[in-house]
Length: 66
Image 1: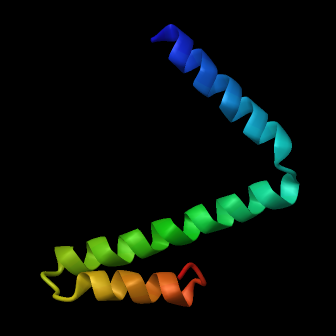
Image 2 (image 1 turned 135 degrees about the vertical axis):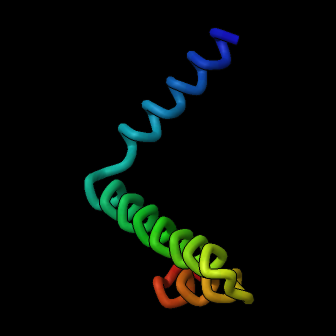
């Protein structure tokens, strides 16, 4: 198990080292948009709404992620 974790850590470090500031910023922006859309879906469900996935999907499309 330790070998697997070590290997994953090495891959993660190599990937992080191979991405520049622009790529890391884009990843952060994408992650933030996904979180916003997830919250749209959660809020819809919390309000007892229907077609919550459609609202989530529309948010993803509007955010340029579909």
